[in-house]
Image (cartoon, rainbow, N blue to C red):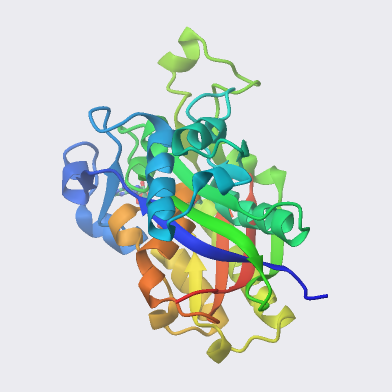
Length: 331
Ligand code: UT7
């Protein structure tokens, strides 16, 4: 019997219209374009304004609809919709269920998946497992985040980094051995003190105090997170290469989480990869959390060739991190 692998067969992406530039941030907090570019590689990011649309689902639906149109897909054939996100529309009702309803995936079940900046990477593992098991034939994985909804625009250590966006990928069975080949996924909950949001969860429900004390915004100990991100992302990417006997010349593309250009460069260096093989759009979108990986696929789709070896790597809050080796399935 032919082994069934799980391939990505279509992608879509969406970023909101409003562009928040470094120059504009200079008027909001004490920072400057030179600092932001040299420390992070970010030049601008997109923000979802209420006049354009509301909530993470707005962008997720746009990305999914682009995929559906491009692929000429009948949405009633989708079995499962997963929305990877750290900023769901609503703390209780599934954002994925709303997205599925709006895109016409009326035969699908749907749920959200939360693993901070590794949400999409971990979602790839989930989507691929359903396909490989033979249980489902079409799994739509969407990474979407409206980071602007949890950012304090008076805090220069976080507001310069994050942006809003969404990307989608369709997973289907493949009999040519293409798609997901291997994964190495990790987490360490001791890291949660360094990156998160104090209030609004079950430990610290919302009160007047929490609002007054600005506890509903994301915080991060940037330097510590940076240290962990640099070493862990490089470690897992190297491990995936070693485990699959991949030389630098075998890897067509590194698809790295877009948190900081210096973290991406360190990972590429450890892999021995030339910068021409590194997918990057951090200068345009900043860190869109769950959307960085699928937005890269959507932006660079035209350059990816059937059979190309892609190495994905991500690191995020929790801590969560990992790497996936995938063979691209179409031209
Ligand atoms: O995706 C989830 C995972 N997140 C990450 O991977 C983020 C990891 N961390 C980072 O990317 C970096 O740590 C940051 C970009 C957040 C910060 O860069 P850094 O090189 O680690 O800077 P730092 O925090 O060590 O700060 C250096 C200096 C400090 O001033 P002093 O103490 O040296 O006087 C900061 O106060 O830069 C100052 N600073 C700023 N200056 C201008 C911090 N933020 C800013 C700013 N503009 N926006």
